[in-house]
Image (cartoon, rainbow, N blue to C red; front, side):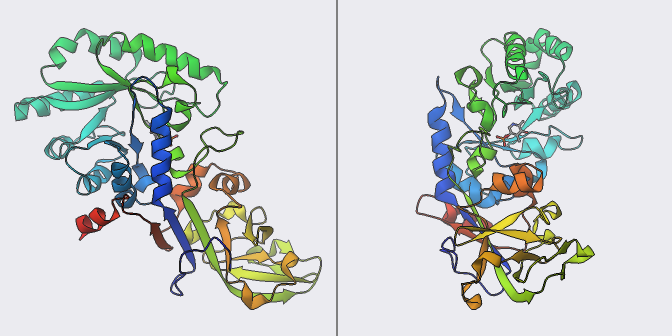
Length: 388
Ligand SMILES: *Cc1c(COP(=O)(O)O)cnc(C)c1O
């Protein structure tokens, strides 16, 4: 057995995903500790907390001190609202879609207002309710994606006295395009633009950095940081040692071992042909579990700390691994392989797949046995009660 499988494996599942909530909390606390000048650390839990389960991770983050949670959609926000205490602030990054105004206001959610139209509709909702509604306003500083353009920011600043009567702008925010490349000139350019635009809103708090942005230094910290990736253990400073704790472990069961001869083909399309006599393992994890097909003939798994190549294409429910170097181990001994763990990080796997760790995590499927490592301080119990 692989030493990483401290968790009991169920025979009902091909693979086990283990999420270490105390490690998640350590990551949150270390990011909060890195922030200077009274900046607060929020948490981005969109896309079901990058595939790790927002309803489990968010209460753990709350227990670690987090009060500001970011999701992408109203649907994600509503699910989170049911699982977090009322004092938490839940922000919807994708903005205020037409028709979402009433639910947003009714459930005490904060839309990130990205267009003049969204600001107008939120103001109209406030007038309907005869109260001031809170929101964040996003400025585009160089991504050309979400947020107000410079001329729209200037117009908003001119009208701020009027807007205030309906909208309480809790933060103005922007998002960095290249924070994971510390020396990229876009970083300082975006910071300068953000400062110029925010100077038109004296006294309004600002939110700028994602995970990597926190590591660009205090100039980038603003009043509220919005890390996602680093909380879940991805390396926010690629090319340098990862300062974060590992949160995810993924192990997959060996379901069959077979001897193959030179010239035998492996998998769909016969894209791999054995050159020597070899022992292949069929492992119960495939692209339906989120293991990207681009790992076929590219990636590897680990047993006993040894790197064993994935051979042939990844199928829907399984893949083949060359167990060649393990010939001295009794076959029945090896019950599972490490796909993500101490020997292979999410970032390592992503590099082999030709993608980024974000895509690996958010692709993690729903078929795994999901196990959460909890402690008295991870809020998991409260979460269970909330779901019941
Ligand atoms: C996803 C997202 C984040 C989090 O980014 P990470 O790189 O995962 O830390 C922060 N801000 C915005 C606007 C986002 O969309």
